[in-house]
Image (cartoon, rainbow, N blue to C red; front, top):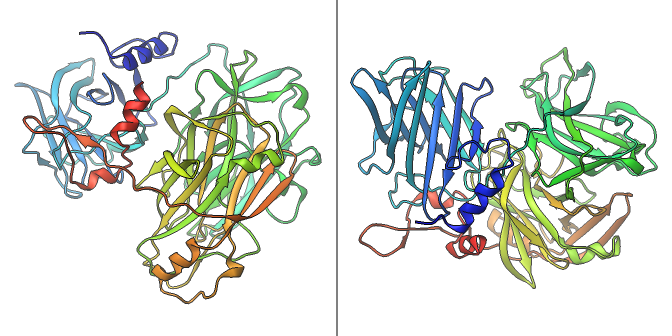
Amino acid sequence: MPLPLGFLSILLAWTTGAWATDHNLPFMEYLDADRVVCLKWGFDELQGDITFQLTVNSTGWVGFGLSPQGNMVRADIVMGGYGPAGSYFADYYAKGNAMPLKDEEQSYNLLSMTENDGQTIMTFQRSIKTCDEKDFHITPQPIKLIYAYGTTDDIGYHGSRRGTKEVNLLNYMPRSNPPDAKYFTLKVENITVPSKRTYYHCKVMQLPDLPKKHHIYLVEPDIEHLDIVHHMLLYHCPSFVNEPYDKQCYMGDIGDACFGVVASWGVGGGAYELPENTGILIGGESSDRFYRLEIHYNNPQEKEGIKDSSGLRLYYTDKLRQHDVGVLTTGVLPVGQMQYGIPPRATQFHSYGICNTSLFSQLVNPIPDLQVFSVLLHTHLAGRKVRVGHFRNGKQIDFLGVNENYDFEMQEIVNLGSIKTVKPGDEIIVECTYNTEDRTKDTLMGLSTTDEMCLAFLFYYPAVDITSCTSRPNTLLLSTTTAQPDEYQSLMNNLPQIQYISDARSNYSVYRDGMVREVMETPAAVCKSTNTASRPCSSWMLKAGGIILSLLLVALM
């Protein structure tokens, strides 16, 4: 039987990649920092089977699962190993933080189990879409993978031998590993972190002198205190920022004008490598440009006397790639003169930021089609969901990002896999859902950890000079701020949105009559059951960022 065309193209792409050693399992991630647990996987097509190979440096039992929240609650789990009587393996599900229960419907098939040189290698397979309500529904969105293992074949409590990592299984991109890798590190040096919950530190500096153009292809965090460094952003500055400094951010300094995102890292994330045909342009004519490194410190215990030296390590090459990458900041303008509050005691409150790309031409003309390939979604503690709707001619055609189980402690850049084309005139709407049931006062949009944000950083090519496209509801027109949450939600949704467009030279364009369009429900994927017609799965897993079958078919065409 011939391979599906989509899968064949993936295999061909991997022949020049760093991990093209197994065409059936082309993708690989270490699930832990110590590289004890390695996962390889591959799939025939989006509607077919997915195969996993879990390798653990242990000769005891091993476990792997798909989890809605990154823990055992409602997780879909397999456990197995190779004992004195041979191999053992079963499909389980977990109701909570206790021993998982064996699933009545065994949806996973063991393909092989081996134990060699102190390693257990478990290879298994399942359908991407099953109709078992206890199975996690795999979609082309980020999924929280969990693992655990023991030192014997008696399955029991794992202790510290466990972990979580978020991976996009169906939209994973290949990686490269040039043998002549060069890098430089931009970091703060031994700064004192104040004993307060939220602190932003900024360092304005130049990059190493690079007379020729180069491309950054890999961004890696270099963090001294993982417990307090929440996120880092590297911005390029307009030409009038031409002096270095190293101090608290947003104190009225000239570097506050640096807002063109170059690189980013969020808590829970790791190194991020760009697709092998893209890179972030540095050097050449812009070699004298200044950059601003911004670090958000989250110190909820208000510890004193912390000295920190953290930053970003940027790998670069003089072998220029096909496309220059840009990063577009979209969502709700984080700060502004008009107050924007999220009411307390709300189970679900939606905030919207809009971006009408037809306004780009007021600053940059012409504007090409923008090819979006990755996204970083960002809220603070009250955030529960983030969705990025893509509209054309007033109708939603797609999502540019979906996370239905947003976790403040797990923020990383996610590769979309299939490239999304944003045409001039398209609209982008970022929707954030918050839960404030435990709060007694309004939550404001702002910089503090206890404030809120609603942002989506879109990674795209070819790069243009537009750096941000955000909005904020015109709350000056709000008739009341004392309405009940549902009524207040309706009032906010109907307010005109003031849109702010900025470019790399810190020029701004403002449009005052934007409107919030309704974002469609995250569509339910379709499962297939033996002896019955296809039917929608009726379980909680459908909310995990699914995408409709027709969109999947389009992606394969």
